[in-house]
Length: 517
Image (cartoon, rainbow, N blue to C red; front, top):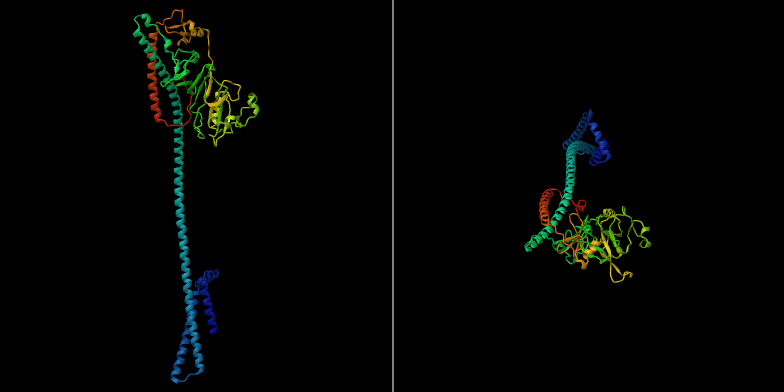
């Protein structure tokens, strides 16, 4: 019996140890206890517990009886002592068995409760996670709707901006044309005013109708602009010089001479009449101060209907060209002697790229190549795929031209021109025949020899001066029409500026397609 109780106690202790630690056996023990407590299990457990309790109580009773007998007899029997020890041990072991069984029951109960609560917490956590996921999905759906609305608004705004840019470009082109026409009318008005002032001065000094009707146009032809001489075939006053170069040169109020071309106005550095050419500068072209910072520029062009031509002494340098569209490679040496045998590539090993005038090391991280465009359209195409460009002309120095050092490169554009010399002009300029000034009629463009006493069609000395009796009337009429035109153009420009002030500003190179010359 005692051995059985010890086995039960050890078994219960083993069960308690298994329940105390999380091992794979704990789950099996819990499942076994669950099955034991279901169905008839509780009745069996209660019966066994009651039996054990009765046996324990009987052992206690036996011990009490033995103690009572010892007290009555006053003698201790060894057999009774063994029996008493055995009964006490059985009672103790049974009590321990019952206590350990109670511990197993409580442990099983608490572990089961803990498992139930854990499952509840997991279910609640999953429910909370599902709620969060649903809320996030709803928020994502709302944000997608807002994103689509924003994309639609951006597309609408982009269309409106494109339309505004198109309108702005059209208005800019119109305003450029009107501004140029306005400038031309202002210049013409200034010339007419100066002519009228001269006529008024002469009218005040004249005592007869004969002298009133004399128009001394020769005195109105200025021969200089600043420090640059103005000789035939040029003229900065209308009716002076050759009609082929009419309105080509403009002298500002500050004495600055400018050349007018389809691409704009360019400052004139000098004019040579012995080797007929004009040297101009383009402020928008690259210079040494720019270095690797390239500014937006526009291609220089000339009106092909005029006697102006780009000199072959010009060299063009292009910077940072895209090799996807422009052939950039070093040219063979024989290209310098036989340029017709070379292709249209941009020479990346040219002398000027390796020795930039005045600043050999101005470019540090930019590419350079040399190319001579044969037409303005070629220059425009090059500038479409290159960052910027500049023009270099070869200036003759010294008295000999055969020396290899007789020419030096300088920045600028050389424009050659022809001098249309005629017999009438030679006779008019002849000192023996009056030394008149070659000019033309502004209405018919016919030749006129401008003299101090008036205008003739041949030469001044020994000929009757033709009187333009309608000079005063024509001048007054032209002045009135010009003034009205200036006022109208001014109002148009003011209105365009008001419209452009509300239009969006766009960046880009100024177009010169609508310039009026």
